[in-house]
Picture 1 (cartoon, helix red, strand yellow):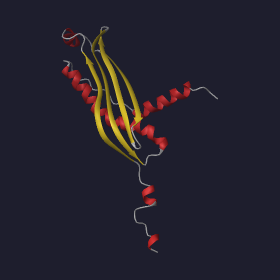
Picture 2 (cartoon, rainbow, N blue to C red; picture 1 turned 180 degrees about the vertical axis):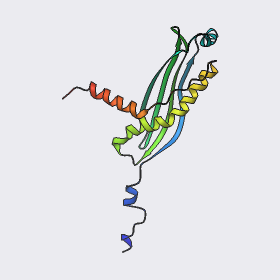
Picture 3 (cartoon, rainbow, N blue to C red; picture 1 turned 60 degrees about the vertical axis):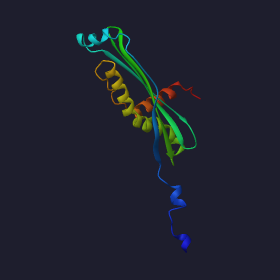
Picture 4 (cartoon, rainbow, N blue to C red; picture 1 turned 180 degrees about the horizontal axis):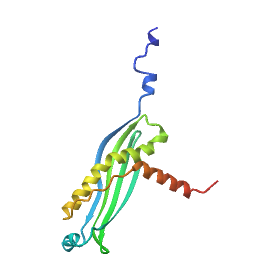
Length: 163
């Protein structure tokens, strides 16, 4: 009779809820260029605002049984009159531990949820670097990582040969 009473082990442990833990975050690579300084610092106020461009990439790879690295790469530049005012390239990473996450959900969790956790820190690094370069801080606009993931899936499906 004692074996019929649930004790928190067995089936309950097998059905444990999925979890994600951030173990560490770090700047993997960072570059900031201010090629026209100090001349460009006066230009920004004399003319209309600069044209901004931004590229976003998220990658991930396994590190062990339950540990994964996600790297958020943000690359951008500001141009005014065809000249680059500043440019940045940041790879900001984190190591995450995923437990009880079904295999088919691991990649989406890494490139959507983990990237979403890394984004505010990467955004702040860029804003401070731009400000330290003599410009007003540039805050990368919010990014919908779920939409980026869906777009990437559609691109892959469109490029796949039909069987």
